[in-house]
Length: 139
Image (cartoon, rainbow, N blue to C red; front, side, top):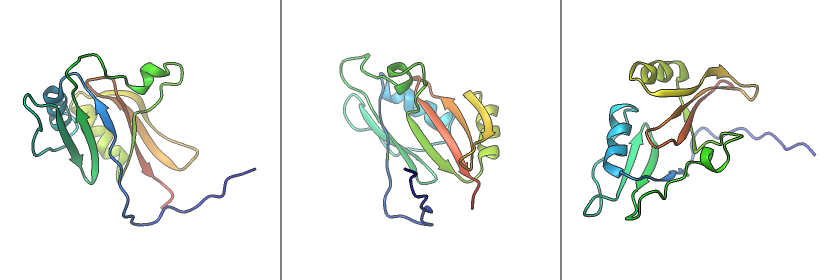
């Protein structure tokens, strides 16, 4: 049975923020700010153990637990398929790809057009989390 294709609404009241466990929340936040141009306002906890990063409406939560080594990117859980940790829809995949490449970000899958109508590429962050950035080409 084929799934019905439903157009994505132009605007939505729902948002989502992946929750990444990291070994060093400050170093990770600095990576996201310096390399991926995300922003944050503050850290929570003493010592710092949580922050929320954002860029253009996309949010990612970063949390550090007292015990190190608890982070586990999805590609570690399923190395054969290289599962994503987050997919972010963006306006201009080529411009973002060029921006991140110029900043030395590890691009793990080059930019390409997919059969499902997205132009996308993947990066790996400083903890091994895989983020895919995709531009909807269908309108």
